[in-house]
Image (cartoon, rainbow, N blue to C red; front, top):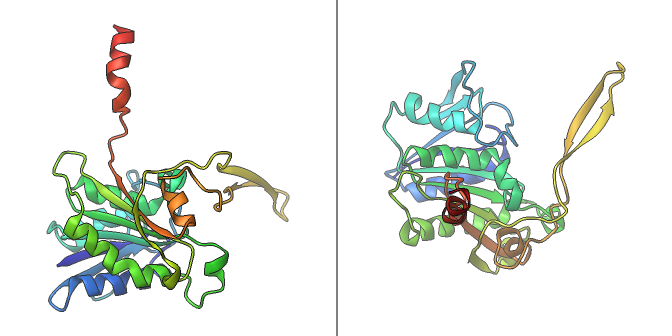
Length: 261
């Protein structure tokens, strides 16, 4: 198996080390793991691509590249520059430091990379490690991901639903904020919504007197509704959410057509 891995935390992120180990085991002794990741952290860039300026794609080692661009850029660079158009069998994005559940899905560069792969017809999985009080005291905060990552991905590859339609399904996996032994299992879950939690801004005045704004996130320990991703994660389960790039509200089409004539 040929696997392309990337992330949004950057080429030197510890979560990418964990993902490399997972991908190497999945690929097997006769497989290949290619790393094409952002040269610098790209958290929160979503599905951004560097459409208006060029990128540098620097080879750091055999099958290891750093791109001065977004995670979606990395998928494009990996497929069409590094692999010369030979599509990989699988794209893995992560393992993100922090959850990409609920509304975080809409901002995540980790998700953006998997989304770009799906648009090119490549099976793709985004993986994130929920962080919390329990992970703070672990020697390896990615312990749950490292212990359960291979089995989770294999389950998806063997028994998951991989569509062949235009907007192909890709998967969002979040590992719970606990130790490996405390993980209770896997749950298929819808994307949730944290009520009363949103991004905002925090003003800051620099020593020079200039005023800046920091983007400020909300509390991540707020559960979503039962049956959704963050609720499962905070209850100790790995959440698996099928996603599509199609943003159409299909449930409203017929009713809207009738109302608008």
